Image: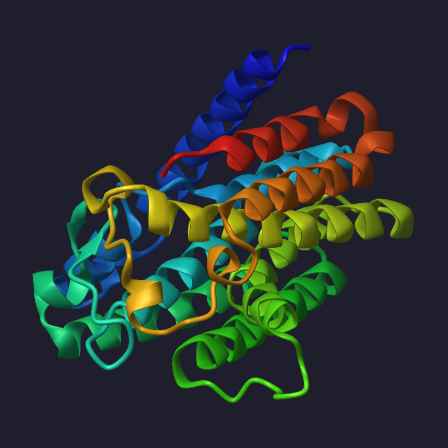
Length: 298
């Protein structure tokens, strides 16, 4: 298999799972039961954009351990709702104060700050409702709720480290960057892989492999993201760039330099691929998604 083939298969895997979760979010969530302007705001923040990486990892992790994607769709949708909630709140003036997301005005620009805050609150509540009401067994539902709660809490802790500080001073600059991003970015990616495994009734060995894969993917995704922030334009990426350095945030390029960042991406990609090698053909889409994420430009 050539790298070009793997990358195309990664795009196909993301595209297929994005359509599945987009359709599920559009048709299975009871938007009509909400106040119209709240439903409109939440749908603006959730539907019609983004890579849908996290739900893709739920779906393909479920398949990687022999499960059917239908068993993972509520969990995949829930993960995406939590991710979208985090973006909506992260973009607010009190935090990152961003005006552009996925090439469109951020939700607080589109619908106002009060509605953006409340729509984000709604997304978070809905996420846990979707998992709790899914058709998985009671034991799996309990595990999924716990996994989603842990990933969400870790993500929030990472956002605090990233925007408000409080990092342990005894850590080196590189250790501080890793601590931020294992939480802010990596936690939900790790949870996505584990939740997919739980939906597919993964063995202990399979769940551990998905965990290692998810942790490597989470850090790799952020190293790439930090590189894009200093090498790509806002128009290309679809969100503001160059802000991290301007705000004095610690980033991978700032600590390692661009060349070492590319070496780190290769190392983490190898770690992710090695972790799922024993899954065989069932793990192939996860491998292709990892290769795609290593070379993405937006």
